[in-house]
Length: 279
Image (cartoon, rainbow, N blue to C red; front, side, top):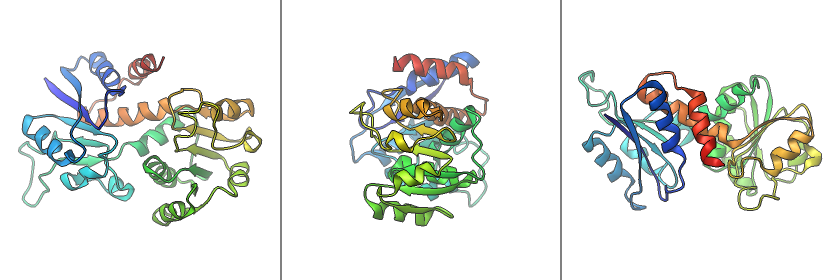
């Protein structure tokens, strides 16, 4: 039996176990998905322990996405983003390593794929678009790189302008700034990603006033609880294409599933299990 799992602190709220196990069941894989909650200074030890126990793969969530960088051979995209959320132990301990190969498990960032695949699911083409990312934290970094790599021109807006300009300096062709001109930026944009937690704790909060939303916009809100945020309600009312945060959560998991198993993930079954957990 293959064992996969999630390390984070806390992890009790995670919807990853039912989502991944629905995928294993649909494909008839002999696998389980479990959660681990290491001490806050124990990320590297947790990865090493998982390797010693023969765990096949790990997802990584807050607060460990940066902490595990030194424990893995980092994929180029994850290195650019500066965070790892998926670790693959599979090929590392086989007999396929050549002299000079890095023997550490492979570290990936599938949050970026989650953004791109969520938009693709809703028939949103990103190449040649003007995109605004609100937030310069971990989700914002993944979204900014994902959009830029897909051919969008990216502007990062953040409450602290210095964080936005710092992120923009790392992303090819991107610009960054504060929130003062956010409305005008969104009014002229094709794509909007809310990569902040605004709308999570206060369901009436929104990062972008409704007056700036329009029918030619595609809006992804990374918040998935509640599943329908005020931003998405007002975007839909303006005629925009809306993508709820569960799609991003789903597709980052789908990408990890495919890295680990080498199989095409059963997206519909995984999506059904995820959304059942959100009700």
